[in-house]
Length: 288
Image (cartoon, rainbow, N blue to C red):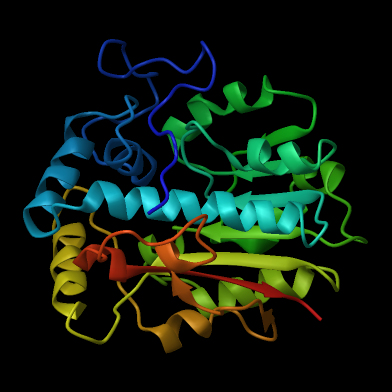
């Protein structure tokens, strides 16, 4: 089973929320998607409402920490594949979340030093730490955009100035759409609009909470119930067919949609998977 360092600050500017005050525009009375993930990864940029969500999840899935690590490790492996094997040197990371020990630009630039990364996230907690990303080097950029409004994201000067849409792009939609209520566009429509804007040869990496439609479905539904009735209030588990519908017109990279922990792992699986590990999946596809 692979593991990655978790919960480490990226720069001195990335301070602990346990001991420091939140920026005035961050509402700490409500749970935040980014901060809930930070909590599950063992990070420090979270508050009681966020920790309440994770504690409730642990009552139905004690392995929630490993579930989250599996997801983060999928991001790292997918980016390594794109920057290395696929030769992608520019990335649009939608819903990037809070910085942690291994971020998209670090994974990409380790293999492609000139790779450029634009992070997009409108969570106030993430925006507050966006400068930490910008301080890393002159090839990482941050936009406080709403990933559920593709036209606005794609028209943002931060995106248009720093990504060349005449060349292939790696678009990352990781751990985001299961928190979207589809009140305006459906998840399929959102992805279709992003994919339509990408040039030929681009790649899309997507991850999503999975209802495996087997004996582990009961765990998926219990986790979903906790998410929906927690201070976060979002977190829908979808089936394989529902997730694959979000990759219209793409050529899927082998092995297609797979559990995050099993998508090109770095080594052999040494222990049986825990139930929650069957409930999050990832996929990478190429635009012809």
